[in-house]
Length: 600
Image (cartoon, rainbow, N blue to C red; front, side, top):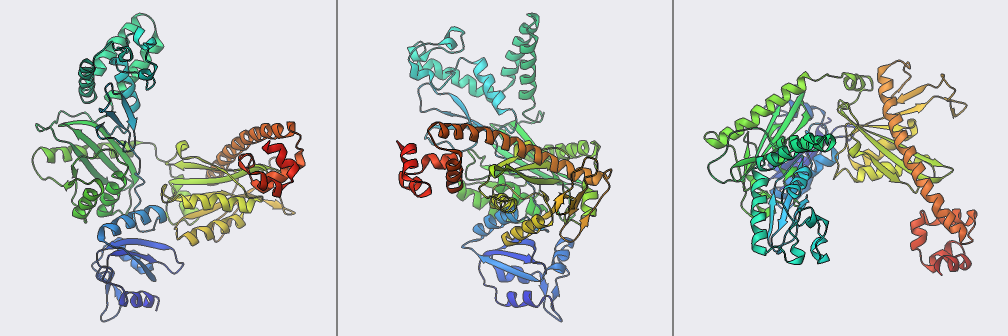
């Protein structure tokens, strides 16, 4: 029977902490879980008498997973905390079918100041800054840079890092934006009072918006409308940093508040950040609602992704809208990570419970707005047509470009929730000489990055069935569950048929090929992705070739011919590698004569 392998594995499981993985008969990863005791945890999914079968008490999601499972693997770790970290990492990297993936792994900027200096400045960081007297303010999910620039606009701070080194008052002093400590025109004590005022304004931002509003009106009266409009936008940005609320705590507490709410089509993660008893910033992110949603997994994933080792500052108390499994374990893990005691609480009454309710109310309001947005059904149609495992809301599309093997590049574009996610686009400088190995190189590099940037729902390749099989093989070897389709021109006599008005695109999935009408919206959707990847790749290729042509011209001026340049590029790969090569290496690749030209 199909389940015999699972039963055999369970009988030999150790009584140690670890991570377990369920696979289906195609060796696709279905589910990743963690355990304090692997044997006890995995056994809990099953009943052994009168026959070996799934435990009827598990939920619908796990029951469906167990129906498909034919194998279970495991990894042993030193502690349950290590198991939690590994579980989260594997979910993010391998995208198992029955685990949820929130994709909420943004790092937020903080404003910080190093007060060990006599005349310190405020800066922005996303990571911990080394120093004994560093103070952080934030996080600021949106508008942190505008807030920082406004501080320097309103207060006479040291405007540039280089100012104090110059030792001479500059233009900033002349326009009254700096008090020129470089010439001793302000004392340390006086400057410290300004710093105290700035700290207050970071939290009580009405101080800033009132000054900006007054200046905006002055500019408007002077008919300097563009400058006035810039200040108006800055005011809006600063005001929108946080959810409007009159709810402040009497205590000067620092709290992070998380609420996760799942609905039929969309879910939302709300984060509120309270500092010194006031909510100073907030953020939310949307995820796709799902019948496999698991609240315990969602909170674990959200907290572990937010509180990384690089996080500059953490409130010692985290409030969550719902209690969840491993809540205490996560708190212990974070306490160890930040070497200070961290508490995770789910308050039921009092002012903190009101903060939770504020987060939940805003979550429902955001979901209501999302439901009213114009909906697209194209992803559902793609999902059904190509028999995908998941609805492809987030898609990555790949293409490569070269000319006679010169300036070989690859490109990845990203489609996310009905729009281009251009911040996630990637360019690849490729070394392989043929299209098959170029795609292999590009996809392998993307797979290696899954630990940092989670896989999408679908890959679209510009190519035919051969490249599709390549991608599926690479993903299977990496243990990643990910749908792939490929789009290619119709071939006549082994050549792509590109006659104007007659070219037909064929789409391949892992089992079939589809020849759709040119008016079919589903084909047009895939073509749109392919064309954007092609555009992005071509642009990068042209820019790179232009740079390479300039570098090639410089070598030709030294008396090195095109054939030798090509030979060197074939050997070293790039002009940069040629430039950094030793005399001996160039001698081997070409000749001592060429090495003397390049190295003397």
